[in-house]
Image (cartoon, rainbow, N blue to C red; front, side):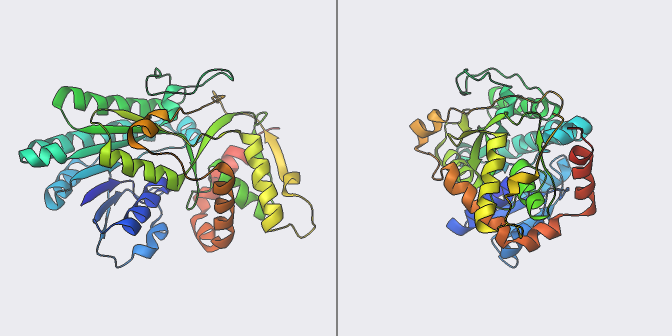
Length: 355
């Protein structure tokens, strides 16, 4: 069996669902159930003996050690992280606690467990750390995309905390020989995305008749990766990645934020027209940019394709259509995730910003 941390969050839950749809190997799913952890996403696994859910923190050393000894997983996949840049600007301490201290506690417990395995167990064991392209900093419009050799230049408390966690993973391999793998992914989108990130926020606000807030001039560029393609990449790295290596995972889809918003509006115009027949694009509102907003990210995913044969299946056009359709078909999930705390957060970040 495998141990997945952060398996009730957006990417982690999609990974668990995909994993159990493809094989019968059990998953121990550890999640702290913060605002972004949502067990409703995993409701289809209720009663499934292959899915063992544990509520807990990767920073709880005793809990982690106990789970490792009890279940004896052959791999640990670490999705657990605080991941929203805006939240890290308002409250960086939680990011240090989870992404740095929590990753350290997890790594150290895993190291002790790994040392206690027999030779065959040690040789086959893997620790896969899921990270982000934001550790590399910002690119100019003409600069080549990030490769695995690009230097780290994190610009937000979030990306700095993820950079620190990446360095800890590397250090545990170099110092102790722990068989680690690291993936650095671009912006994910798709089903079950918590509606504070760009794409789900635009969908939810559009349908509610609210403003569609776009930071600054909307020309910030990101590389967009459909979440199920990301899950397939992680499975490939876990199965055949070279120990100690980093693999960048991207969608080969560089898009400006304003173009993303206009694409979402056009799809909603087609799939769920406004009652007045106007375009949802009329709801776009430019708001003050966030501090230190990175201008461009872009991933060169050539290494994972050359070594492991992975390439995204979805184009942005196919993936975004599936995403918008999913949100239209799953309004109950959206309504249930929109707690009072979430509404307060959106107000703090967008409603109160000047144009």
